[in-house]
Image (cartoon, rainbow, N blue to C red; front, side, top):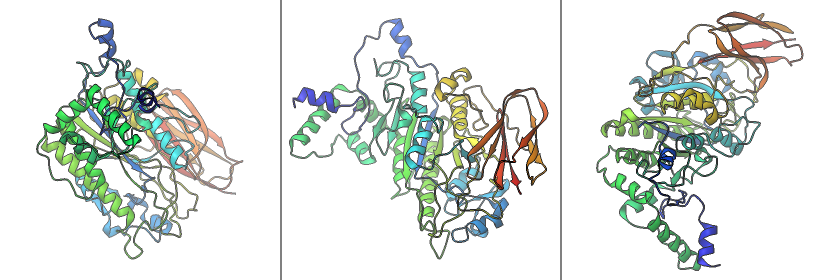
Length: 525
């Protein structure tokens, strides 16, 4: 193969840095025309940064955020892995939940007003496949559709619609998004090209700023790789701006050692402080696929899951401390996500199987701290197939952060997230002139009779506007939408005919603008 042909076929749109893989191919265009400048200028003027932390493998949310409100039923469902109540970490202002005892870092952030816990995040018709569920979370698609772009990539395409033509430029000389720890994921994929570059691992990052390269083999393939690296280094400008940003920061707080997530977040803090105007960073850590031996058989507060949670908690706490030390904590908000939670009932192998809804954490100086949502109810008797029903659609969290943190106009959210989703009180809206009132606390939906044999009346209160009422089964799947339309404010009822349903526990879910509530109901013979 000729070298020119090799380069054309081997360099994806993503190769940018010799040590930092999967960036972008650039083309030089004139930047003097007003049309080109208007295409290259971002839509929104903001210095806010969003950090996405992927917990790969499906984190067990029930042993992460312990449901103290239903503790006896929690113990019955998980006799071999439950966390003893006296070991659960307490949270200021609530006795309904607590944190896994390994999560002292996040406990500290919560008690200091810098952590939001969002309960039971999921979506209708959940997938229990790692690959498919990950794609759903990254693309923000319905589980019944396949979308080949990512939600953050579509956002960046909205902000920089002509990318990669003419980039970098005087308006945006920096990478739009950076992923650390792996190749660029679907999350950062735009409609046409990847909007992000990746730093494959921390070693490559320090190789870059120290001017060194990983050695290549003395083979034809190795020589070609060396040549590609040389060409990339000569023709791409992002390597220089990343290196300059990194080398301008000479002091950071101490991060925990032997912690892969901490290593990644340390780089993120360094690049933000170094002056990069990159809006989205993504890191990942795992695996949380704890089918067996999730805890120690002699002490359920330690073991595989506890070690994972400790590393996540310690890394985020060090990162937040570093942001404060570097005086950039007012600009950064972080968010954790995992492709699914785990089943309510533990298995015979001392682990948990693939489930549905799970909690999410959003952290930072400008989050509205506290707990969003009700403690997920656990029945006194559950089967191996039972799941927690979702309270919040994960895309509502995306919509809320895009709107109140990255300042996307409400009318533009639908083209980014493909549908309209409720916005939630997650951030204080500083810099975007947006705030979402927290209206939770009132019982908004219930059914009578409960238990019921064939029919029951669903009573609900709406504050007006779009109102959605759904029935979910115990596996977390939507059985039916009872209503999905705009209402004027008031109290309403719907007669629900459940005569064709099998006996068991079901859930009725209300979503009204920023509000949602879930109520359990029992169908009997």
